[in-house]
Image (cartoon, rainbow, N blue to C red; front, side):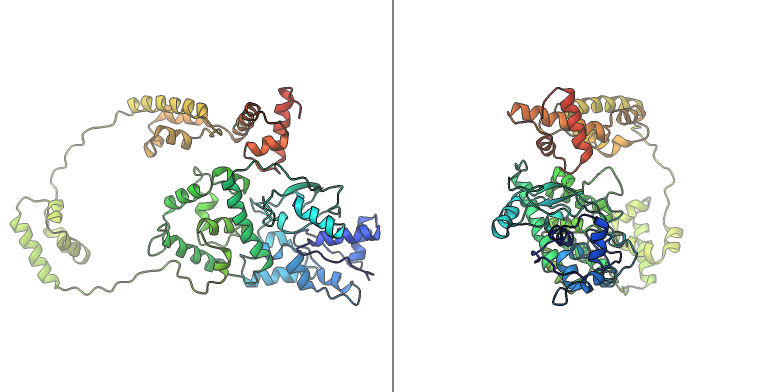
Length: 505
C-alpha cells in the first residue's frame, strides 16, 4: 500500500502524478516503482488512456478520497478521445481503464491507425509553468497542451512549448515538469493573427471536451447534425445530398492550407478519397476528435451546441403521391392532336411545344407514346471535330508556361502538381483528356514529389529570413516554412541544408 500521494494539480496528467510521487519517494528502479503503484500488478499500458486504475486506487492510503472515475475524467485523455464515440463504446473503454483488460485502448478510440497523432514529447505553457513555480515551488504536465492540434495556451494566449521529455503511447521515463526540462521563456510567435484566432477557437472547444462535456453521441447522430448544418449553408440539398465540390471549396477558403498542415489535416484535392470527402459519409470508421472540432469550427458551431442538440433530421426522402387530373384517353387525344397540328415535327420539337404533356405521356404511357410518335429518320453529321494533336501541343505549351509562373510566383512556394498547373492555366476538365498524350506525360514528369517540395519551401524560408535580417535556427525556419514543430524529418532536412551552405545555427 502507498503511504501518501502528492496533492493533485487541476488538469494534471496521471503520468505527471506518478512522476512527482516517484521523485518524492526517491525510487530509481522504474519496474519496482510501477509494481509499487499497482501493488505488484501490471498497470499502465498507455500514457493517455492507462489501465488497471482500480488496482491503483485500492492501493492508495485508507484516508484517500481519490476515485477511479475522478482519475479517468480529470487526469487522463479519456474525455477528449471518447467525446465523439457512442455511450456503449465509451463505457467499454472506461471499464477497460478501470481493470486490466489486455485490450489496446488506442485502437478502440481510433488512435492507433489515425493520421492525427499526439506529440512524441510532453508539452507545456511557459507562463503556466512560471505561475506554478512561484505559487507552489513545483509544476506538472497538464492534459490540455498534449491535445493534438494544441498550438496556443487558451489561458495566456502564448505558444505552447515542447519539452525534451520523450513520450510514447505506452512508455514514459517518469520525469517531472521542473526547471531541468521546462522554462518560462516565451517561444517566438511566427504565426499570423488568423492562425492564432483559429487555434484559440479550436482550443476553446477542446477545453469544453476535457472539462465540461459528459454527453456521448452515436456517430450516425453526429453525421445527421452535420448534414443539417450543411443544408443551412446550402452545401447540402433539401434531402441531405452533399454538394461535395462546394464543401471542399468552402472548407479550403475557411482554413489556410498551412494551418491544416499544422493540424495534421491537409486536404489533398487531387485525392478522390481525401479525409474531408469521407468525413460526412455514413460509415463506422473512427474520426479524430481534432477533425470533428475543425469541422464544427468551419460550420461556425460550438461543440457545446452539438452535445446539447436533441433532434436532427439528416438525410430525408420525399414521397409525393400524385393523382392524375386527366385520364390516359384524354392525354392520348391531346398528344395525337398535337402531332396532327404539327406535321413533320420530330420528338424534340413536339416536346418543346408541350413539355408538360410530353413528360406525362412518357412517364405513364411510354409504349403507346413510342408507337405513335414520329422518330428521327436522319441524324445530322457531326461537325467541328477536335484536332487533338493540335490541342495537345497548345496545352503542352500552356503547361510549361504555368510551371514557370508557379516557380517564379512571390510568397510561399506552391507545389507543382497537375491541379496547381491546371489552376494556373485556367483550364480544368479537358486538361485530363486521354488524347492529350504529350501534355499528360509532361504533367507526370514535372509533378513535384513531397520531399522536393519541402526542400524548396525550406530554402525559400531561409532566403526570406536572411532578407529580413532574422537569425537562422532550425526551429524558426521550420515555423516560417509552415511545418509543424514536431516533425523530425523536417528538422533533419533543415540541419542538412544549413550544414551544406555552411551556416551556423
